[in-house]
Amino acid sequence: MTSETEAGLPQNQTSIPSEEEVQAINKAVDELNFPWLEVLTLVETSVDIGLRITQFDADAREGRLILHGEARDSRTVLELPARLRESSTVSDARVTSQSPANSPDATSYPIRFALEVIFLSGSGEQP
Image (cartoon, rainbow, N blue to C red; front, side):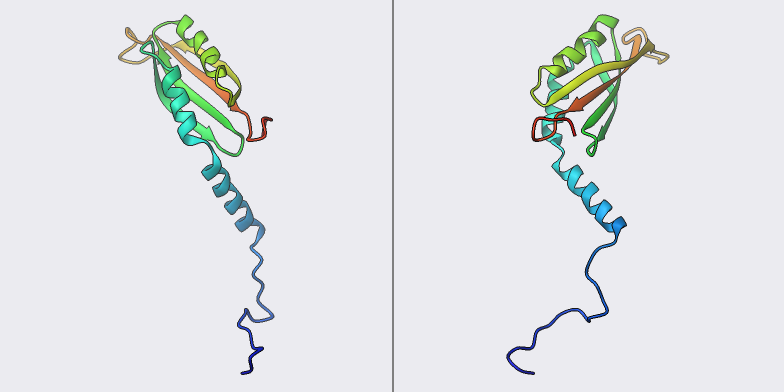
């Protein structure tokens, strides 16, 4: 060995990740970069006692959130998108479905709904 000897991978072995590995890494980075705390705080401050969220699905790569829930009345459901759009991080929010609930608590929350929220990317444009 001389002072110019360097350690490294054998010449026939590459260190470039495969396409699958790159996609997995990018997906993980997208999920880590998703503003989870801000989104959870936004939902928490937008939902009042007239609503309850039953399912929360976020797609970090698409910057999209789908909320499923139940409400005491249709007016409360229709007011929720406007409350969510007040956030500077929300591009759009809209009710995607609304129907009578078939649950044991239907007397308290007789309306079932789904809502889609689209978030702005970091640069202020949709992803």
